Length: 338
Image (cartoon, rainbow, N blue to C red; front, top):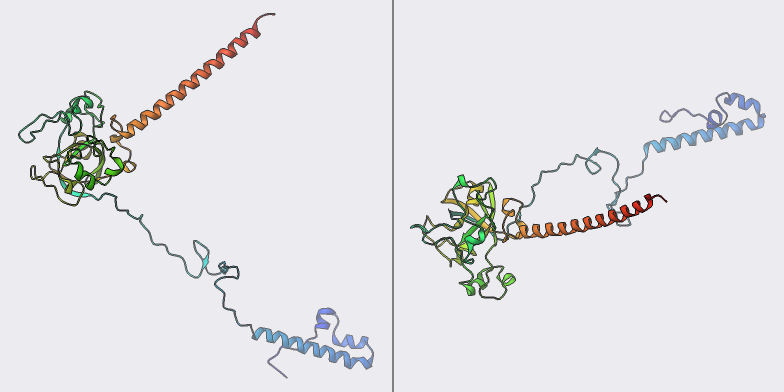
């Protein structure tokens, strides 16, 4: 007896004919000459079926190496087994390292640890500052156009960084840098990065006035417009547009003057070390430096938008009045007794 194979059973008697039809009953139902043939056929079928079942249990086809890409060039489907990751099934859980946004270097690099002094519109000459500030290097009527004296006394300034006595007509966030492009035109053409794009060709026109800067002290950053030249120098192009330190030796080598508004926003005193660099208009964020001044492009844009809205409002009011007058007259005509 072959002990490696399961017992021989006829699929004919137990599957096709049901459990009540045994080999003995089958042989009693057929004639003697056919008994041997029927039993032989059943035995042969049982042996072959058993052998086939045993072969399928012990022999498996070799696994095919998966093609990384299908014939259409698309990635092969991922098997639905293993640990579920954030994208789909995978053999191991996916791990994502935290990332930081890439820091882009500014167009104009920071000039760091620059001695910074305070100046203001209407400042009278003193021994330490012999130049009066009722006019600037580019505006002979600076104080008049500003609207008055930009009092630096903190007790005379309001919460919005403006003087209490009046609303300034120019931006109260202003600075001075030691270069005058009108007086140094040939050097300005070479040194100022935006000169070609901004200069009108008129020798008296400046491309530096009202240029935006960012001034940094600690974690605070303030934005202001370049409105005057100094301190103590108007030709230091290597410092303003290059990588040199300020040439000035007065006031601990000061290279930047800032207005009382900038001082109050940053919370600094005269002589503080600050960082600064030029910025484009598109880089200036919202803040108090966008609120005042006819020299402030952001205020001009707001005024133009406000004027446009007012004009549209007047048109709507006019159309409303015309519609009301027309309908009221029609109502009165229909309401009269006939």
